[in-house]
Image 1 (cartoon, rainbow, N blue to C red):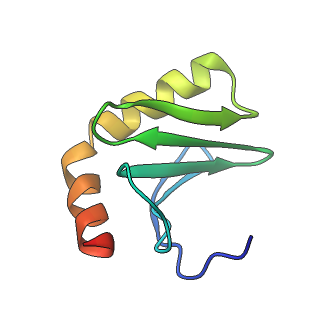
Image 2 (cartoon, helix red, strand yellow):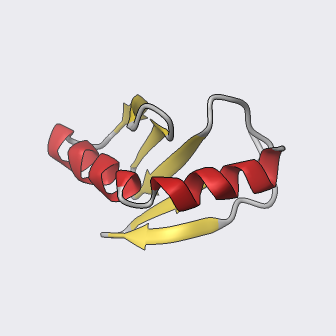
Amino acid sequence: MYILNVPTLYWFKNIAIRIHTKDHKPAHVHAEGPEAWAKIDLNLLKVIEAEGFTRSELNLIVEFVSTRASRLKDKWKEIHE
């Protein structure tokens, strides 16, 4: 799959937090690290799916995203609506 215009909104412990411009609902962000990825739902603030991250890494990512959820939701709306 080839995705255009994928802005990185934050870097967190070598993990990029991104919103893909050609994506679908529910509103979510992608956490992408070396050999790992996850999708985090911005409304429920929980992992939708993931591969390669440990449970403790996922907990840290969700905590990081939840403290920035308002700005990330605004950015999602700006990109997709």
